[in-house]
Amino acid sequence: MRVVSESRRAQAAVDFLISYGIVILALAITVGLLYEIGINNSYTESPYCTPSPSFSCGYYSLAGDNGMLQVQLGQDTGTGITVDGVACAADENAIGDVPAEGNLHVTQNSLYYPPNAFAVNTLYSGTSDVYSVYCYDSGGVATGRLGSAFSGFVWLNYTIPGYGSQTEVVATINTKYT
Image (cartoon, rainbow, N blue to C red; front, side, top):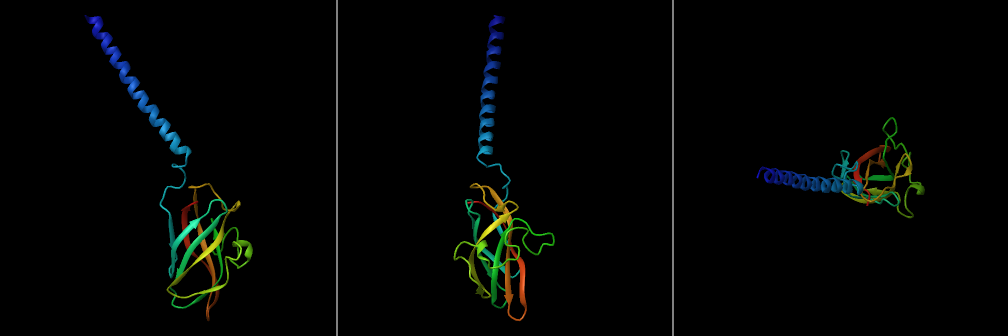
């Protein structure tokens, strides 16, 4: 009688270990798959576009295949500004006043924009416009696979009547490539 009881306990222990082993194996496979498809990548926070004071940031999208950022920027400085250039880069220069890569002087040079995408324009206070510009990182045009992260800055080179030209960061962005 005693042998049968020990046999049942041993069988129960084996069943217990197999059941939990299968669950642990399934969890390990799930975590591995999630990691492989990019769920656990460096992009851990929600997308955002944080504007500087007197500016607004609306719609934004970054194409992974060509590094093209489309961003809706607005301003509320109390006067119209002439937008002379737009730039997007992952890093600021050492001083923090211009991009570290790409359109360093935030000019209207057609190299930094898709064909026929940028023209000098006046952005009136309380209005916004959509700008298309290539984003840059230390490797050149910032491209990435779908769902991977990009963090950077958007600069405007603009002129306020009577005050001259200035360049400044008007938005900080964190987004996924689409």
